[in-house]
Length: 164
Length: 99
Image (cartoon, rainbow over all chains, first blue to last red; front, top):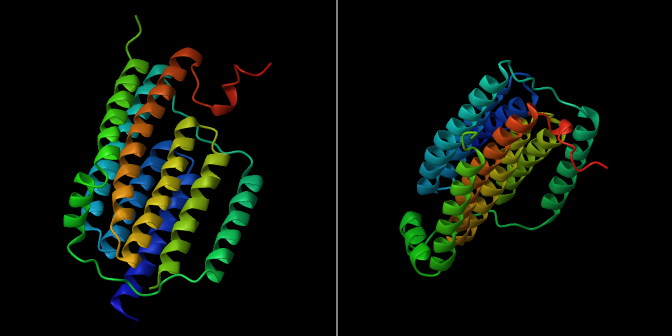
């Protein structure tokens, strides 16, 4: 057992366990906290795949930003009705069947498809390459992304504006 | 660890997220399931990028993360708006389009 295999299994158990907790806990607030753990576990996956920059982005944007915003939304909506949100599930059998069948199909296909088993080294530091690609080859999508962020945040604040 | 191990891990997380989307009644719960699914896709992109020695997948992951953040902000704004109009966050009770 190399260090990589041990790390992979620790991360796999952490990710799958916290993801299951997100979809199965009764308390909505606990669900969000488990999601934060799952997102941090994903940052660990990125670290193991030598994407240090993405791991940082993941923690700052997802585990920091998204979780905070979701917690805010829960607190605001609970205050609006003055009662704790119920967080029940329905159609458990149907959902489990569809998800299980899809997982079996995916694993079956992945097992039969030849994929590379060894890592081809990057020609330079990945963070350096990401920055260069963002500013040269992908500069147009990058600028478009800025517009999308502006529009979505403006419309979000418009939707959630105070009642007049 | 070969590429397929990471892909299977991502597939498992994706299916758990799908299960959450299909079974949760609360709209915020459904959003959390979508988060899990998008996260699994990001793992796939980074894994492919790493094993092919090609940085394009990581650039795409940055785009995916940014779009997800925008989606969450907008989705939660819609949830709050829904609360104002209907006093509910249950997806089942949002059936205005039902004839």
